[in-house]
Length: 187
Image 1 (cartoon, rainbow, N blue to C red):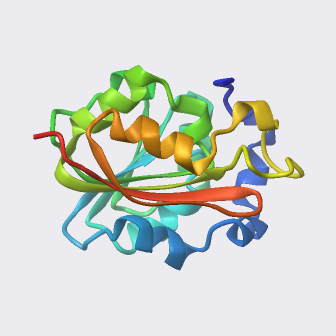
Image 2 (image 1 turned 30 degrees about the vertical axis):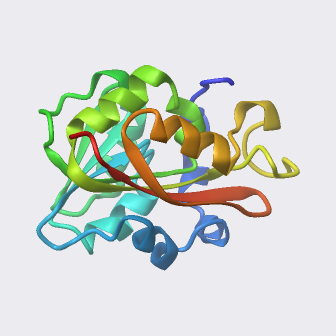
């Protein structure tokens, strides 16, 4: 699998509302069910397209992206008062153990799905915290998103998450994407 990142020079495409055809806000929120007092981690936030939507349902959101340019663009466009951009690799999250009440990833799982990253994600999520993932599926045709050889199918992603202490409740391939819902059961 390739672990490329989205090119910052194409960041404007991340704010295109046509992205909702792949995962709507309601569907995303249903995958991990954030609460108004919860601290949520957006893994691969880019310019904050979905972060903004989740921020209305959460107490606070850590908008994590590997690329400093994405956080800069998010700040320039304007972000909710309860969202904080953070630049770091998923393999080395600057968060204490159990500090996050929930997490989500939209169209970025394929960019960070290493064993080290998944272990780190399990570390920062509280026991019982929910994870929601929507990403490009390897079972798709590849008309949108990254090349097929850089994607995971829902079952592959679920298997990898299970090996890191997650109980997967839903893992479903769709036409070009998959959705997954899991609970961190590290203890």
